[in-house]
Image (tube, rainbow, N blue to C red; front, side, top):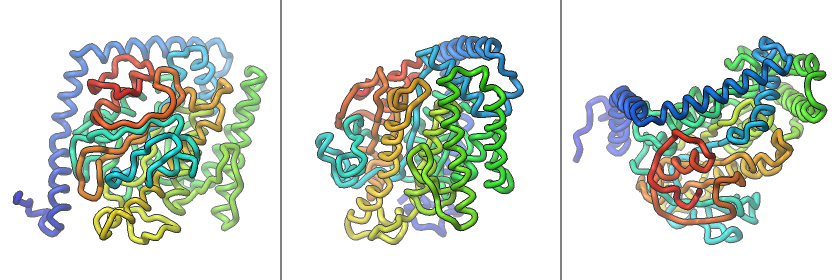
Length: 455
């Protein structure tokens, strides 16, 4: 039996061993970062990325100069920044691409996840098929080895095995995020309450109300002391800014961003209604916004709505949605299993509770994919045509903490990726993450040795 450090002896043996592994990774983090930076520098990838970003940035600054819109006004309005970011992206097809990473903790019960066809889902994957949102025809289901087993390994899901190397979302944001008001956004549902996050792209925001206030203003800061008031002020500022430059926009651009303002107005109304104990309304994004942590599904879908709106109006091209933390301390609603998800993995006599809880959670990424299909981007086409959704996890089977057969999904209609439905096993988490920048046509981001049939 492995020796338990004295500071962890009060914990059950399994949890103590995981806590020790977590601490070891924290201690090794600085050395791991230095090793990554050194390897990246000498590989030539860094220079390739920097050249791409510099050229893209120069073209964008030239576009701003020709637009006649004051730089100060752009800095104060995320929506106006998005106007030009979208105009620029449409002119540069190489960067008119977006990515959303969606993390679900603890994998899936063995034999209950992989579907057999686009019309025949398994127990956990029902939300993607005909019984759910019917998005399986553009989903590539992959079971891959996540390399490191156990808890405290959430970062593995995005292609790293230490705590300081950049996760894949951060690496892609360094290339795509140079001309958008936000290089990336990171939202969650019960993500920050306990344990390790899946990404090191930046602080994760678990509260949809505060996320709205932060993302749709021009400061890039937090949600303010009173989220509803802050968001209301932000909305009013966006409306004034849009009115001030409408003569400089094309008819199509102004109509598109007026629709976005109308959507934000409804979100503002929802926020006020929730704070006053009233009901909610439906936004132009096609779903009710719930500006509070009501339950995992409602909060996750609220965050998904925010992400889709931010992509549609050009505020960002890179988003991460984390559903649960690696310990799984979330609960369902209207589920037969009433304890938290962690106990569904370990406390049930069979896998029925685990299956139920993870089918419940998979409803959120299926909803996100469907939302991207139904929401138009700046080019008038469905966002899914220019966006890739990458669903990731940190384990194979959370019931025994094994690393094999970790359930991952890549969903998109973006040229560069294989089309239609597919399902297969093999490869590892590095291969899957490395396939994403390859399919997006981004150079200088290399990981893995196989694209797993995704590209």
